[in-house]
Length: 429
Figure 1: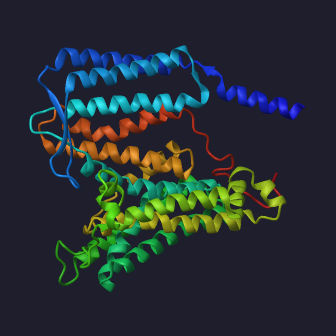
Figure 2 (figure 1 turned 90 degrees about the horizontal axis):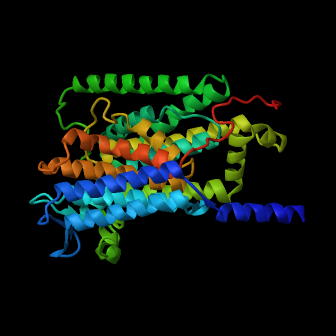
Figure 3 (figure 1 turned 30 degrees about the vertical axis):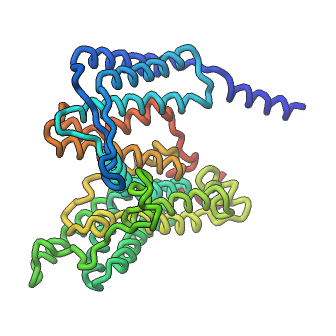
């Protein structure tokens, strides 16, 4: 009876209405402010045009901007009011997602209402998926490491090693796929050093990650300078001769919106989505995943069941380097670009933020990466248009603002695995 009572209490807690006054007030205030600005600044002749630019010709929809922005503002206010009155616990995230989506669409509708601007739905969404790739690969690598109890601050360095080694091997072998394998090997070697120092010598994992980032930056910069001195060097060195092209999956690529976004992409996109579901399945549906999560949460309990904690951590971290190294190849091979110094530009650290947004879950990582990729694509598109009402520097901040909003308003507190970053000696309690 006690067990049934506890289960009933848990069910009641899930379906109970819970007030979120701070979040509700914030969403309500944003909605009211947005509606007021639309009434004050938007004229009645302003229109927003959405168009499908890859699969259909002349498929476009034009909406009056001011009524659209006001309607979306009212949706935001309604979500905020719902949270003030009381929203069911399991519907809180849904309500927040609706409010954030309404705000984003309202701002986009306003921004593209300038003369000559249209929202190219398929191109922008396809670009958003492509720009999310480094965050997917980097965050997945972090998930595997931290679920195993090892903090991987060195994703930035693994990106650099993968980007440099991948394009170098691709040129030596004249094969872009050999370059991908080289990038994966470089990433694995980088994380193997982290794994050894973290498990065998039990060095502070955050310090090791920072040092490995600096080591990768110095090594790739030095090798880049040395290659510049070689005979026959030119500014195009590093671009593989058989650059990757988009791969269309037959009739699926012709489906409006979904086809160009998901089924007419670079091979890196297909690998990223396959990895997300593969890592999720392995973590939550296999014996290896159970052991991995146990050494990340309670290594002493795993040790008592015969699991070699440090050995599992060592090989898991090394395997995670294959993912982040492949992610490094995105910067060169996927974009057909030559390697340049520090070309990853700190995106490895952003991938760590995406991992936290995703709550150390591969499916959550995918959602967080797509949000960041969409924000990046929108900022690039509006900045390139030149006549947007939003200043260019502000647009460059947009992806980071979106990440802060998601962390603070959509998922709240995120709890890392209990033994994350904690060294373990056999026999410890």
